[in-house]
Length: 448
Image 1 (cartoon, rainbow, N blue to C red):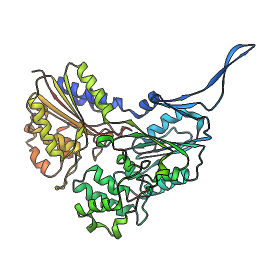
Image 2 (image 1 turned 90 degrees about the vertical axis):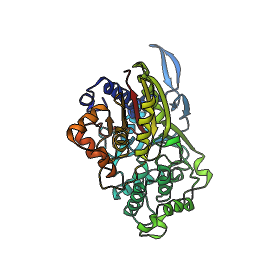
Image 3 (image 1 turned 180 degrees about the vertical axis):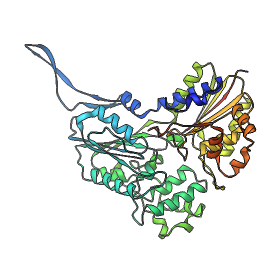
Image 4 (image 1 turned 135 degrees about the horizontal axis):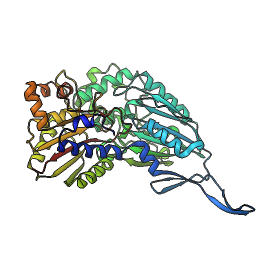
């Protein structure tokens, strides 16, 4: 099971069903599983008849088949793998199983190291803020791909967390980027705004990896954690032509008064590659997204006898406002209804507490929920700005806080959802899942 404290949380029939739905979503986006199921190495053979009967002999390098789309390897000399983000380690393990000795070399830059890799090198960087480790790893990736030829193929895996990991400042260090990004996050900037700025803070984002890889062929398998699956903003689009400019980034910095914390001119912004030639050999594929998880969750909910409505990629805005809105929507729903949401909210940090957007969403929903309703919210990567993935709240939670004599509003004001759910025990624990799409929210109403 992905949810480690499933049994501890499943103390009611409604909770058990909600947790089963969440589990189905996490299983559907399991990185190793989806690569194993959807990436195949196809060999080309011709029959030869000999003393021992008919045999099959390979005629070429075969082909790579991704979601039934075929990429011929006939003129491919070497295959390299570059995986970046929270899915990188698991993806590298799976790709080594699929491609085996065909991989010449590779790097998997993740938030954690993985063991068991044979050809691909595992590197770990810091997250959610960058460090010198990230910069050194980024340099290694650039050095691996910058001198390749037309008969080489790079298989990229791009996933959430990649923005932070690909820290390659032209001016200054990752310390300046940390100041900038922290100010944007605390001010409630959207992920698109943050990644617009990030694209112009590193020489490894915003299409730069495509530039270094040129003229080699590239295929990028992209694991989307961004609303609308806009390629430019997933991990800050390292293999995608960027349509934003330094001017756009400066507008965002000014909007949130970020220049006040920047110790270097223009906050160290750099322009991204704009030459179309760099992107012609690149094929970018949205490989996994929140919709994959939501579809699997809906299927499970229907099997459990619920009427399901999916709001795909619509979850955005202030976490506490969205939590209240979702509570109101499930309260109005008919019995045996499940509402599913994917996306990403923001938290405007004003208090001095600890927590993440999923726990804050659940906390804000709690006081508005009716006795027959429940809300569960979790980060698909297992990290809701803490070691916890999210939280579940319902009438059981309300009964607990009555006994504990604690007031949800006091914790909400201080952005202290982490300690609230630690006290009630209604947090969700998965550990780092090795997957990463949007946040996933379930609202469920019993049949009473």
